[in-house]
Length: 151
Image (cartoon, rainbow, N blue to C red):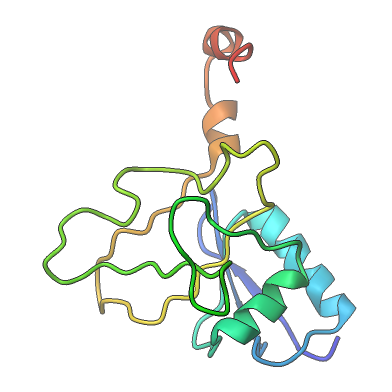
């Protein structure tokens, strides 16, 4: 492995922070495999202090699967798969409007979402993550029987 990954869980339910890597550089297969394993184990992974302009973000995303264009918002010129997520100072509703799970409604949803945060507040913000595996596992057997037939 070219990089020395340090993977630190953020909570018992979801998330890990990965350091010791520069995502602006091409990654070898072992590093990609270790990142994928951390992603599968922790469901959300964070890399702080990375510089990922659209071309590098797309190169990185392609190591994990086939990027797709978001069906309802136009992507960047030259990078249609990169959707700008912008919340202006006067706006009070989060981007997307409500709690949602990115593109899971597609017949073949992508394996995940990459988010490169370019400008973030010092505190607060409205991007949250939920472990839906744990949410389901925590349901009573009766509730599981009620919702299992649903799609």
